[in-house]
Length: 233
Length: 233
DNA sequence: GTCTATAGCAAGATAGAC
DNA sequence: GTCTATCTTGCTATAGAC
Image (cartoon, rainbow over all chains, first blue to last red; front, side, top):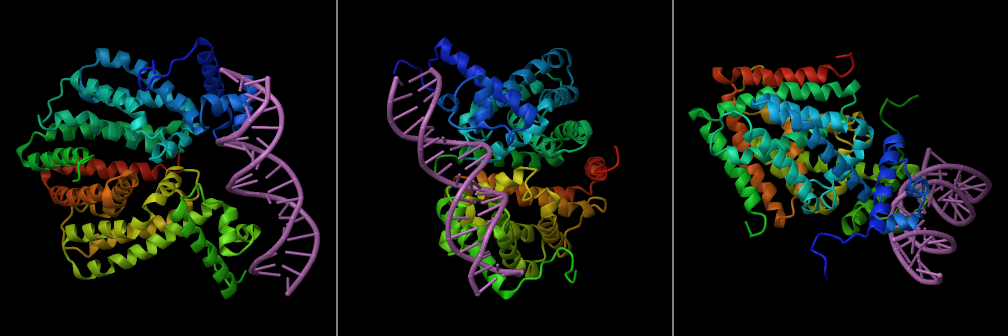
């Protein structure tokens, strides 16, 4: 009971074993893909028993969380420079999106499994589930930085919702990327390069009086959907 | 060689067994979920051997195809009336979307697995994979009927792409539905009721000169992405 | 061509001893 | 915390009945 909720006290020893297992798993996932990498192989390669691997990770899927964390960390670092120097919205967003692709590239093959988990609402690894909320919030915060650090002018009602909308856009791109079989994922790059200016333009247009009702409806809809989370609609 | 390609000649007997197996499986999936339903249990419940089940369905996943087919068939029938009588675009689209929810409702719990497969590009059951192309094409054709049978006026460049865009919209709604935990999936209903008028309005606006460039960019982007399928971009 | 029975493998997961 | 042994289950293989 001395532990703070959500955190687990970890001895240096257990931490070391844990890290060893997850790093071994991630390496094998990259080399042979998720399906072909067995728990037995991970355990053997890491020099621990299968039971021990399961002591730290309740399932093979749980090991994928390591993937999320690793990517998020690398991604944030990869965006740092662009976010610190560039002031225009479109290039900022573009840098963040391409940065994600750069970071995720080595995991493309294995990334399938990533999104398979993502799509399963019962999986604790789903980006929509409460479990992975911190990762989701961090990503939304990144998009808030994209917006706040830029010179773009946004409809005042739309602005607070925009980071979450951009995150949704990112999820869509990720979904596309997972399915992208083109060399070097060129199609995903193309998708980004063509949608970013579109988004930029639409955000600009959001302030037009003619489009105000549309903008307002979208903002209201999101608000209602989020708000109707607990109370009976 | 007497068979037409893509079709399998089925004796009444084999057809009966096949149906028996898939219906048993679907029932057990509904009752206990996909993961907890074993092939052994399906075979036992259907009164056939495991080997026989595998004779008809090469894998457990293949049984999920029965789910797709069933839903698609029921959905089309459920939409028939509305598509035959209603002439306005928004109510037509609304009827098709709510019709899908009605039909899919009993499978909501099990539907997770449905979308898990859908998200895996390597799965032959993915709606994006070529294997399930017929199902996808059928669904796009349904949206073409929604459009063609309506009185809505659409930008001429946008029109041919719209059925596929509506299908994408439907995929998004399905994704939302899979994650929807609200009673009777009220949130998904809300999502439909609020997004359909929005779509209707945006389609109307697509003909405005001011938005023409945006519309054109979207159409071009889709064209480029589809076209760059085989040749080196 | 349709089906049973059964044996067996591989791999995810668990139990219980230490 | 860690291990070994065992269980479960998706799936395959085979041999044979009708």
